[in-house]
Length: 573
Image (cartoon, rainbow, N blue to C red; front, side):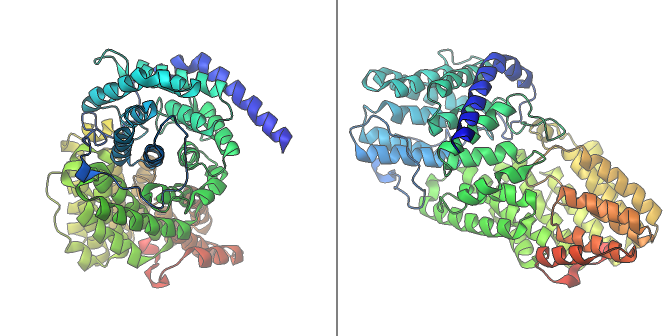
């Protein structure tokens, strides 16, 4: 064990030196391609005003025991600082800010209480730094700097490092400031290699230079500072295996790799450790879904939804729009997707119906990934509802063409099942009109490949029409076009398209009697979505048709499929 620790320390030290030497080059390369999932100009963390006595945030139960001892004369201020830290790493940024502000009220001489507010107002991997956050962030770090004479060396170094993130010039370009912060935290990580909190801040700083972009296309080679990110987080987890922030960021750091299972034990330890922090309750699902633990993903997302609903009920108007209309619906979306893989119709349709009531048009207008959540119920209905139910779904209107494209998709699938092929073709044409005539650059700038996703929808509808005609060669042609588009879409969890189209290709190949090719298609679909019940059922049927051994697949399907087998048919895969 000791030798492993020495190796880990040496690896981290090497990573830190490498990071310092190449940081500026790597960050510069990412400046033009930074994945900002939130539209610049809208900040929900900065929207929380200074709390009055009547708005004093509570000390919540169920947020775990993460602590970062700071210089303060008030035990209660320390408690609120720690709560702010826990909420920060639970991506409940506005509520974290309220906790840091309450800590300031309790101890106006607490430098780190102002530091915490300045930190949480900065960018994170889901949210760029926005204009209205700049002034309060600068004010907070300046207050911390004014008080730093009263703190020890580590806190003073953290304050000086964070000051580099904002700078004196309010119009300064963001990327050089983010690089300066990351470089400063790299130096601190070298100075304090046994401090898990500092290692997490360092990893977070690096992740913000290339958010959601940590691996080359092969999923094996770290991209940019990806290797340093993973090394810092693994060292933090070696120091404190239950550090929730290290676990959270580590899951994000490795989920898009070809080996997400390396974070499985981390996800298991995070599970249940902060039962009131809905986003952290949910986070293990990012690994569970990737490795095919759909039942576990369903369970943690149910718990996350309950935690978020309790928080939103308690916090009322103090809850940020982002948390209420972004992170909370994300958990419902995730539950729906995992239930789709496992065939749990009640959870699928229940989640779809809930999403229709808890998303916000205004937030969906600003945030591309929330618009993707808004569209998702139509895909759930397309897979699990009967055609008449689908055709009765109301027209979502023209404000969100991307969402309306999904509505046309669901209708096209339903009409094809009913045999009304001319009407189904009209739905495919409507999707094509949206693709051709709608400016979706706003979504694509936020890395939602809207036209490609709708292109998949169009081709799948056309394939369903051809399938209904028993024109399997034509269906195969459309499906290969859909697969071409799907293969080009970057990683996102939940995926931008809800199932692997190769599973439909496998069904069409099997319908032509091409069992061996169908087996290959289903196996490829299962590589993309492990333990996907639909693809396992297809594989089982293809193996049977090809006179292959089926016992392992039969057992895997029995474990994976939690719903009614009556839902399954080749026409529905």
